[in-house]
Every structure is written in C-alpha cells, then in structure tokens.
Length: 390
Image: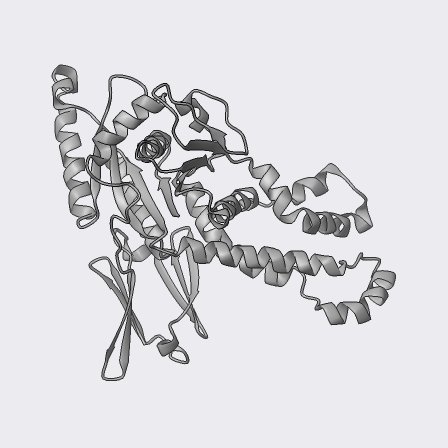
C-alpha cells in the first residue's frame, strides 16, 4: 500500500491536485481512498457530495470505479484515542476546584486533535484494504505541526504520569487520602502505553520512504515559491521524502496579453527558480483551466495533464538526507537543509541527542551509533548542507 501526502500553502490547489491524483489512480484500476485532514474541509466540494468520517464511494458517470473519500472528524478521532486519559485528567483538575467549563478548555491542547487525526492514516494502512491512500493535508504550517507532534507527544507522555505502577499501588492510597488527589487506575497506564505505541508506529510509518511520499503543491508566484522552499527544508529536517513538486495554476501565455503582460516575466522567473531550486526532483505542471475542477471526470482529465505517462503510485524520487563521513578519526555528520539562512539555525547537543531549531521548527533526534559518546567540536552551513563535526 502506498501513502501520498499533498501539502503546500493555502490556496495553491492541494485539494484539487490530490483529488485529481485519486481519480487517475482509480481510472487505472486501483482501489483508492482519499482523505482530508484539513479542518476546513473542501474535499467533498471537489466531488460534489457530502463526506464524513467514514469512506464514501464516489460515483462516476462513466462507470463503476474503486474510489472512496472521507473527511476526518478530528474531535471524534481525539476522543477515540485518549478519551479515558482525558477523563482522568479532568478528575485531577476538578478534585479541588469543582467541575467547570474552564477545565474543559484546559483539556483542549493545541494540535492534539490534528495529531489524533493522523492515527487514521496508521489505522487505514494496517487494515490494508486499499492500494493507495491519498491525504489532502492542511496548509503548510498545520501540516508541519502534525509531523512534529508525534515526537513532541512521545516526550510529553513519558512525563505526564511519572508514578510507576508498583509505587502507585504502595503510595497511592496515602497520597489520595492526604492530598485529596485522585490516583489513576491501573488501566490509565495501559492507555498511556497504548497511545505511546501508536505514536511510535505512526512515526516509523511516516519515515518509510518506499511507502510514504510527500508532494509539495505550489504556484509560480515568488512568495508562494519561497514558502515551498521553507516547507521543503522543514520536511528534510523531519526526514520526510519529498518525491515531487507540482506547479499549479500556470497561466497560458496567450492569456497574458495586454494588462497581464507583466505576468509573463514574473511567471517565467518563478518557474526558472523552481526548476533550479528543486533540480533532480520531478517537477510537474498544471495550467490554469477555463473551468472549475469539481467532478471525477474533470479531475481525471486534469491528472492526465499533470502526470502524463508517470504513474502517481511510483516513488518518483528518493534523496539521502543524512550522511556520515569519517576522516582519520574525525566524523562529519551532514544534514541536507537547503534554502535556509544560517542565522536561523540553532544547534545543541545533550548527551547522545542532537537538537536543531530552524525559526519556529524544532527537531530532536538520537545520534547514529558511531557518534555515541562523541561531542560536537564545530559546525558550518554551506551549499544547503549543515555539516556537524564530531
């Protein structure tokens, strides 16, 4: 089973491109599920029908095809993933002050609902009922939050309930009686371990480059291209495989005469920038059409323009993000992070963990086995590569 995630700045046409890809693959005889994780769902509009939190068969006027679509209900997925733990935390917070609407608000952690919607990807993959899952992601910023949350959540879960099961059985009744704080039932630890395991499985799945591909959708506009470059760098930081760039809404030259003549130069400059910046990665183009894309037939025709003879299910590119070179007992750990200003980079080592911060994006990861016990002695950023000396 393949998983294709389409991301990019809001308004670039991710939903249409993702839906068109789904229609093309269904037309090739594949069993396809497309789902939206964007809370401002518009996937149903592309197919002209209402979608919910379960797969819905999409009907074609030209015959029966195995295409299904769904729009994730993040609230429902959240309750399913951590309902019992949330209930305990609610009892903990209300043990002294009583229940109130403020407590409910305190338990709405930013990003949690979006994270739990990602569990649906893992669930669908493990059920293995489809040939391909296509994910219409939220705009860039929210997508990055989703990708970094598994790692952040993993650390949070290890700290949320520091009491061990055995210690709780001995000290729990005393603490509950003297401090009047409700102790967690033993099943709460089971829930935490289950949640932790799911997060670990999800993270491992997202890093399997032969299964999961990220595809960045952009338009030939300077500001949008800049955000696409930043998006690409952040995805590199999280070791996600970007295997294609899709340039949408390209104005046909014949439409840019007269008042819009200046757009010819602007658009061509942006297209050259995209070609130069993402050299080696497949770049596909989609012209701005005369009509809206809102039926399976039109979407399938649009996908033919984008992919031509390319099979969208293929892994179209696979780059090597991390490399480790040894020279006379000195190690260079190199991380490919293009399009950055080195002033935005912060680097820190704590034991065998490396912490990298790029503006508002933060990543920590365990160093390769060969670097265990070694310390950073220098670092430099050049030609889009962060070189760290150990």
